[in-house]
Amino acid sequence: MKIQLEYFALLKDQRGCSSETLETDAATPQQLYSELSERHSFTLGPESLKVAINEDFADWDAPLSEGDTLVFIPPVAGG
Amino acid sequence: MKIQLEYFALLKDQRGCSSETLETDAATPQQLYSELSERHSFTLGPESLKVAINEDFADWDAPLSEGDTLVFIPPVAGG
Amino acid sequence: MQFSTSETTVDPVALRSALLHDAAGAYASFEGWVRDHNEGKTVDALEYSAYKPLAEKEGARIVKEALKRFDIEAAACVHRVGPLKIGDIAVWVGVSSPHRGAAFDACRYIIDETKARVPIWKRENYRNGHSEWVNCHKVNAR
Amino acid sequence: MQFSTSETTVDPVALRSALLHDAAGAYASFEGWVRDHNEGKTVDALEYSAYKPLAEKEGARIVKEALKRFDIEAAACVHRVGPLKIGDIAVWVGVSSPHRGAAFDACRYIIDETKARVPIWKRENYRNGHSEWVNCHKVNAR
Image (cartoon, rainbow over all chains, first blue to last red; front, side, top):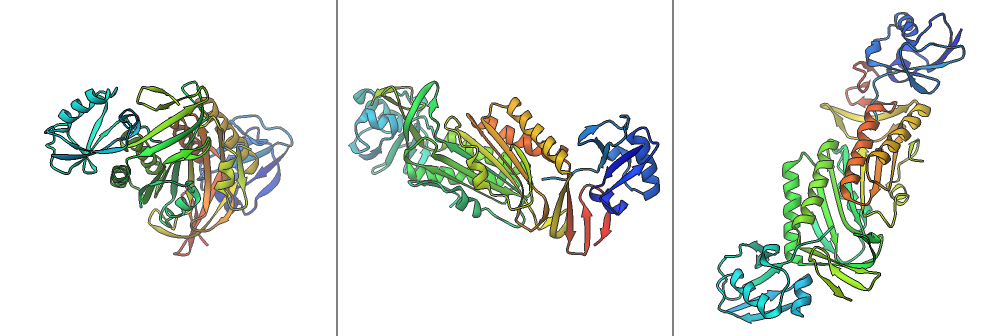
């Protein structure tokens, strides 16, 4: 299925782009991050990230559906 | 001796003036307030007042000296 | 001046400018506004009266205490005196500091101590025709 | 809008005006200013980046939580995004309320939760030529 990914902060730098559409068999954000992390040598482990699906926070083991927008959220630093 | 008195808030209303010079034998603010309270029917007891002598806080039993400026300070309500 | 009484409108913009520092990352401020009611009574107007020399001396002591107790860059407080209208700023406090915790703590310290210690009094005029020196527990006909 | 991100300079005067209420006697505000140093390093410039739809959604939730938890009249928060200079306002919070305790508590709640939960990131550019996404524990050559 097709998943839309957006990247921010350090993940955007390490991926080298701010968004992409991926064809994937990953059933959950956890599986997908594991694949991407290996492919792009992401330095942030999943324990320091949060997940958002379709513009709201979601669990790492939430089921992914065709056309979902997925964002892995690095440690925030507003203020 | 001569003591300069200034009145604020409710004490000013009840005394009917904002300052006066008094000739008194009172040795302390405590003695003087007791006299004045009776003379002018002040409703505030000394336990709810503070005392200032010459523009700084002082004790009720501080000695009064010729020419001192004395203020009995009603409960404050700034802010 | 770190603490002052003012006969004229308080200008938070100008006061804030005086606290700007490149090293300060946090700024907390507090304003007390004249409300249209107090303890269930409608307030039409009010006035503040100060024993000015001691008010400014005690107020300056409070700001100095805050500078000593908390890790802050700068702090100031201004209190209005005279007649005020609903919505006017009665008191303003501003604090700048490296980090936000100290800014909040110092700002709160200054307003709490000011209300407790500075010889300033408030007379409220109520819609029912009475007025009262707040905290003096005595209602007088206007 | 109770929470917004802004590409342009934050104006505390205009934002404060929107919180004025005759019934409110207390107003607390907080500003985060861009500092010239962080953890011992000299900062020349910085930028904030936001995942905007979720930042505004989560920020609005935080302000709503504050309105529910504390006895306040109104509250708002604005966070800058994009490149900022030393001294710029990075974040602004304002709260009006009947009494001062709730204004301080709500103001602090909003800035604390915003810093902890809202998806906004800060990249600092240091004088030594490096830059860093704060909290991401990784230094990159500029």
